[in-house]
Amino acid sequence: MYKRFLPVFLIFMIAALSGCSGIDVLDPKGPAAREEFDLFQLTIYLMLLVLATVFILFFYFLWKYRITPERKNHIPNGPSGNKKLEITWTVIPIVILIIIAIPTVKSTYHLSDAADAKNLQGKTVIEVTAHQFWWEFHYLDGDIKTSDVLHIPTNQDVVLVIRSDDTIHSLWVPQLGGKMDAIPGKTNRLWVKADEPGSYEGKCAELCGAAHAYMLFTVKAESKQDFQKWKQAMKQKESGNQKTESAAAGEKVFKKNCLSCHAVNGSGETISRGNAPNLTGFADHDRIASVLPNTKENIVKWINDPKKYKPGTEMPSFKHLSAKEKEELAEHVQSLELDGISGKGDGGHGS
Image (tube, rainbow, N blue to C red):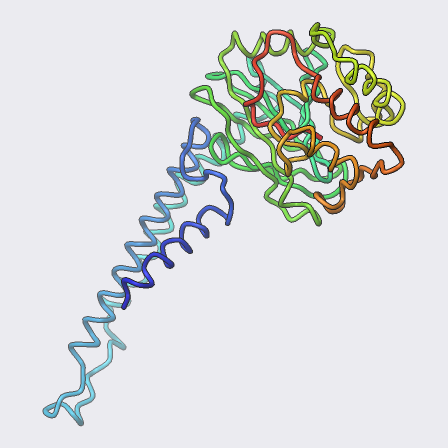
């Protein structure tokens, strides 16, 4: 019968280990994450060793001192007063704690030093601001802002300077460098580094409100050449691609209704108050607000009733716009491309 429940048990264990999420937590792709993963493995192996020892001894004594007709009234002597046993089960836990403590303290100091403000020379520094319910990334050297998509160069140390704009959040990128709290009025730092190009999922690891589960982001690691190419594209004017007549009309709707909150780099649409995601390169994003695939139809749904898809979002609905204006607006934001950058696939989430 146990075979029937084994798959259910394995699924439960996998879900528990992954935080009930599709995010990959046991496949490190950088030195910081690998260091933390090694500590995790060490503690798991020691825990399994202790569990195995306890269960073996339990079943051994259960069998050895079981009641038989010959020992029905026999009461074995207890271990009280046995100095060897008492010393053994006192020393073993201390040894286990020392084995765990030494590498843990060493790694804690190493990871902290790597992100320390005194050791930023030669590292890429990116400011991260957590909002309910999206992430803002600010590249100080180019005054570039992105939302929910973090571009970093591979094989280079990156320090994230993390703050919060409202409540407590926690930035978590398990494949690159663990997690760090974003606390209002306080600045924390996290060191991340990617060994190879790829897209790595991140999320908020602190219950921060109704749409906490949708507070996702993607780290896109790319070669130094591609990273510089992307930064250059972000600084340029909007894509030179010819807009359709409908998208051009949607741009007017955008400037009239969306510009007070959203911004688009290099297009003149930069009057943003900073309380809404920057929509530069929105056409390359996979999802809208982390919850809907980036299609024209879904953009219209999002404009109609954002709170239906992300409870607690500060974006109001725009039901006063006509159906034609919503279609035009959707076409405009889908035309926001970066020159020389490939199309969708960066895992971005949009607004």
